[in-house]
Image (tube, rainbow, N blue to C red; front, side, top):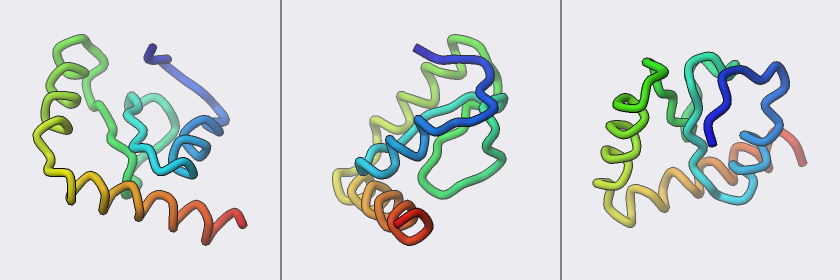
Length: 78
């Protein structure tokens, strides 16, 4: 379930450390970050479009993002 604002988005870091690809609203606290998908317009259609585009990625493209997330978190927080 999307939230509108989080001053300490620890859950994004936790998701990235598990190799997941977080999808967040523009109000979540991230400006641009590799591996974090940002929904610019906070409405249902924008969320649908973002998830639809993500679902068109190949398995290798998704795996590349997942590995980059995991590596980034481990490099900065281990």
